Image 1 (tube, helix red, strand yellow):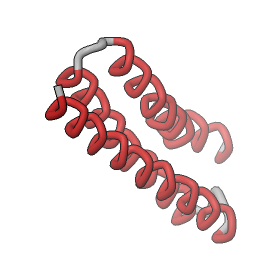
Image 2 (cartoon, rainbow, N blue to C red):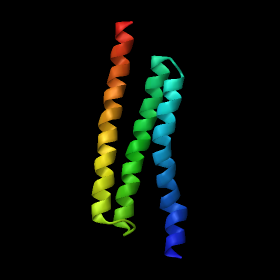
Image 3 (tube, rainbow, N blue to C red):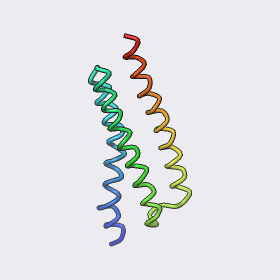
Image 4 (cartoon, rainbow, N blue to C red):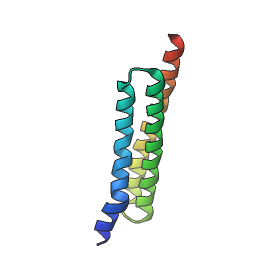
Length: 97
């Protein structure tokens, strides 16, 4: 019963948040206008932070190990840095035009 509850609550939310990072980045890129692209990247960043929060909650609830938490957060931090760099690039690209 615990597995079902975990999957139905935090599990689905974690997957939705993680999927939203990629989906928003792709949708913004497809808009072909820097302002819209940047806005969707901000949504992606929000989803990324939401994903980090769910990973921490999973650890706190004993659903994943400390080691797995560290591994996931390290990957998410790298994605966070890359996304921030991309957002900065979009702004610079706009100023060059």
